[in-house]
Amino acid sequence: MLVKSLDEISSEVSTPLLGFSSMSNEEVIKATGLPAGQAAKARMRLFDEPFVIPEPSNSVEAEIRDAAIRRGLDVVRGGRFWHLIGHAGKGKAVFILMEAFRKRYGELVSIGLGDSPNDYSFLQVVDIPVVLGNPLTTESVFSRLKRIHRYDAPGPKGWNQAVLDVLAAL
Figure (spheres, rainbow, N blue to C red):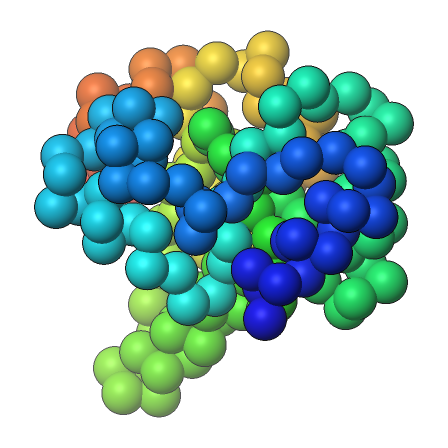
């Protein structure tokens, strides 16, 4: 359904949108740096369709979002790709998981680490939201979060430092 919807949106906004499902493994490897086996697995999507806007602009992005909303879908920007989403996103998934753990184990403290706008929904529901990477590229999206912890170091280095700091504070 998402692949078909992305094709429809692409036609509607007269902008070629290249989705993961249309990319070859080689294109995914080049775009992501993933090894061949992981690139093939990354193309097997169930809940979203990552895509590229060849010439992004605020007006094109708005048209794409509007077209998605008319179909009951959402569009969020990730670190490298845009994502067409047909569900409530990571926030709902994290909320359901946390509720299951609470029922089984009682009280818990949750930490969420994110580095792109598509992480916002789950960072809203965790107890300790952590944003990794350059604050200049993420500030506007994450500025509404309360209790935010910021680490300018991207990727594994920032993730490692954040987890160690949070565990030390607990």
